[in-house]
Image 1 (cartoon, rainbow, N blue to C red):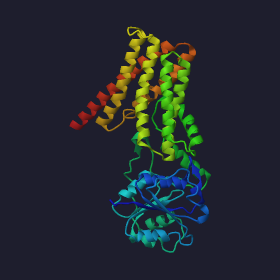
Image 2: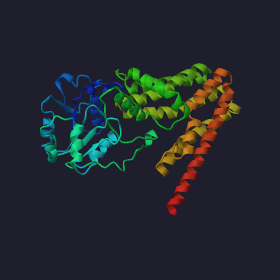
Image 3: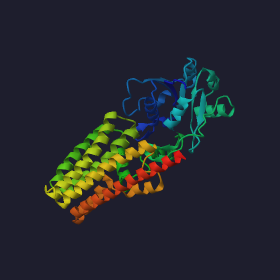
Image 4: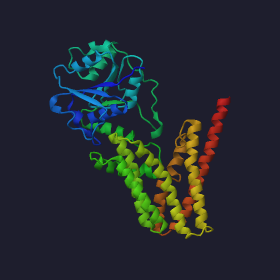
Length: 413
């Protein structure tokens, strides 16, 4: 494995300045390189494109960026970099480049190149050192053409993607490896569609799958180009969650449900804003996960307090105890399943995908509760949610034991 800290970007196409969710295509590539640990990036671009002047958000100070305006010899700086004996990652500045493919290049033991196996306008990328400078002598062709000719002429090894893992566990979906050049509007739409898939889970509950996405993406589109940070959105919905606890506890159910629905949408907005604009934060991620776990329980307790009127022997109090206990089990079991089986319980088999769609999750529960409040049956709806959560927790507990024992028997045999 080579140690790669320097990258070179062919940014001669005017589409480098087209925006995709707030970021220019070139800016997206630079931010991805920063996330991958690159500290030095050289951009080859015509002066009139002003490649850095269109960036939307500040870059980390740790990244050193230089721009070369050698239009007659666009690869001159690349040849110079390669001559310094350190390997260089090279890519197209107007392409949507899969960071997983870039990681594969970085992990390669020797120089190699790849051209995207999918997409209407495949792009190329490579990891190269001094021995491959001849590829770029006396040519003004685009980078992908140079790399394609190099691979076809066996002047450079081709990166093998035959064993590439398409499944992305956090997204619960398969995405093929891609490097997509964007040179017109249809290709921009193709990249946009793929980018959406890389930030939204493929398997989810009914509300998160069919109701929230358009609302969440719509909000992100409005603010992606602004200074509003993902952490600011996280703090906003956490504050709303606090108000919801008070509203539920005092019986202001319709207002509480309304704010809770807004909070649920914003809970999806912060993550999408972070992933679409490549602005991540460990603090924000932790607040998001802890906030969800804590406030979901507080909402259930607040509703139980209101419906029971403080009577711990009432039907409402018993329902609340069942609900909170089942909810706690439902938080723990998936983590154990993941640790034991190295897979998520939500999409392990087709039956699990269906159960995730219809099971008792806060998004589903909240919309059902809101419907019950509007129709005039809030208490009965609350009791129903308690039973729904108990059935969900019981099912996932059974799945944990069934799958784990089945895998253990298979390994023993």
